[in-house]
Length: 237
Ligand SMILES: NC(=O)C1=CN([C@@H]2O[C@H](COP(=O)(O)OP(=O)(O)OC[C@H]3O[C@@H](n4cnc5c(N)ncnc54)[C@H](O)[C@@H]3O)[C@@H](O)[C@H]2O)C=CC1
Ligand SMILES: Nc1nc(O)c(N)c(N[C@@H]2O[C@H](COP(=O)(O)O)[C@@H](O)[C@H]2O)n1
Image 1: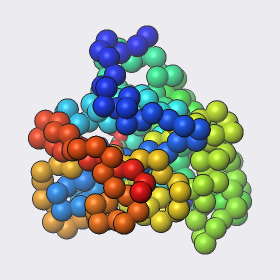
Image 2: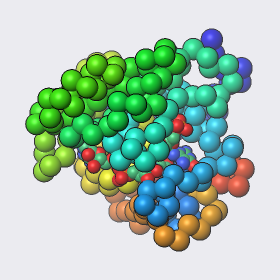
Image 3: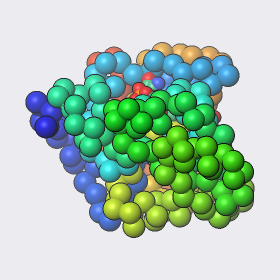
Image 4: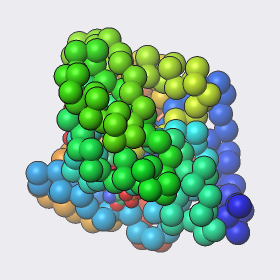
């Protein structure tokens, strides 16, 4: 089953992939916040840009978040805002970076998989993660992949390489703040960055870097107005 509307042309162009392609994308306020105080999830995207985000999910093989995002938001990472996508395979494979395997076995990603409402989540973790956590998450439905750590973190390049070898060539990276910072710090990792900028001012909250001030990326096309939001597209220089 496919959505009853065609994929937006600007996304087909913006997501044109080569081998092993990574898109970093998230929603932020005008003052660069992606969440409220204490990591509280914020409804930043307007309905039109949220729909675009779900189109992006639909157009990638896998979707990656950090464990901080799973703990704070309990996300589903599916394409439910698109019409007629009851075929769960139309959603990208969920991927979680969880160094010490602290994810709750009751999280929605695992619950959806156990109830046949979502794809099996893939968890990347440290080889030193506790055995009992690995066993618990595995029993709850997660597929587990142990990785060596680089400066205390799982290497983003190693994860994308591993996903590529598993057949997940295009990966949409949604956050959160630490994952975004790691991606921006890793040379030659990202093929593109697509940021939804809401007109809201959040004040206190979790902040991300202003990409337009990052010397490694430049605008790849002019901004797009979607509802009340602005979508900004960047590519590596
Ligand atoms: N507005 C938006 O579009 C989005 C907002 N968020 C927000 O972000 C917040 C969560 O962000 P964070 O707490 O920073 O957690 P996070 O989601 O960035 O996860 C960070 C954790 O991932 C693990 N990790 C493994 N390898 C890593 C690597 N190479 N680099 C970084 N982390 C690695 C570590 O355990 C680390 O503590 C939540 O409040 C959530 O609401 C998350 C996604 C999108
Ligand atoms: N595009 C976008 N706009 C917002 O306003 C958001 N708060 C987010 N958050 C991201 O989406 C995840 C939730 O996904 P589900 O709705 O549960 O499928 C959340 O964890 C963030 O990654 N994104």
